[in-house]
Image (cartoon, rainbow, N blue to C red; front, side):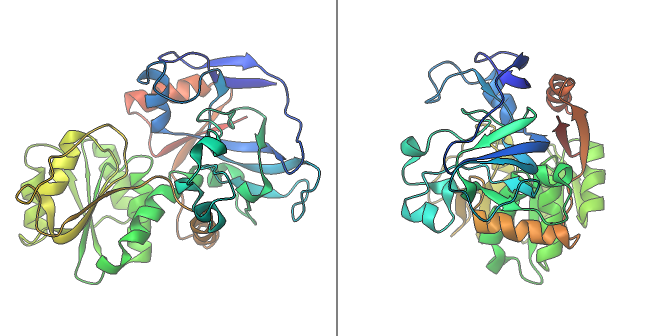
Length: 344
């Protein structure tokens, strides 16, 4: 079968012929309906030098996956061939206390777990994906796998971040979403659907701000030197109770500190590599600074339940497997609206 692979660090992805997977005991082969194209793949493809990660190419890209059960390994129960499923992407060891409660994204034994699919092991940008355990697939119900694929990361990651801050997202509060692309537009939807907060969206692209308004943002602000003052004015000078930085660059993190209010949350979701000085006088009093990584298996189930009710929906453009390299080029150039999904 054909697969889109990372063949070398700091190198364009390549379509290659690989063997079709065969499930061993406890494993599941999923026929891929959709594989999301994630901005973090660009860091993987073009920025990471050899030796930085504890794994090496080649491997098939694609860590946002959904499709149908194709084959079951010995001992797998509770699933049927042909059943539509989403693939939980943060593969843990399955045995530690965090994995046992569904928080495989924070597995205690990452070395034992190995790399996730698409991030060191073969992912979903191919007709078939080998999933190492049936616990990592979640039934989709009547959701279209193409529409569901981006939710496994681009939806789950902001859902997890927002869920952590729910006690602060009360009536009269304000949340700021910085960067409203693939993750951010879903974050805006979830803020509008799950909370009574007022949502302010920040981006440098007019089309992204248009998508943010359509997703539920009440105020949109163009990124730039006047953004902090505009956000402050929009909050009556008080600042934001929760800031979600879906970019994670130094400039966006600095903006987050400038517009957050005391006792607020600043959560960095994006992995653009920025950093902040942290000290008694460098951030508002009692501001909580945090990062997040993906979300839990139960949270994915909750998110898919919201999607089945029509509460959240990813905006996406589809690409064939043959055109998957063009999807990454569109992502690099910033011309995508929402997410890209490869349909093998």
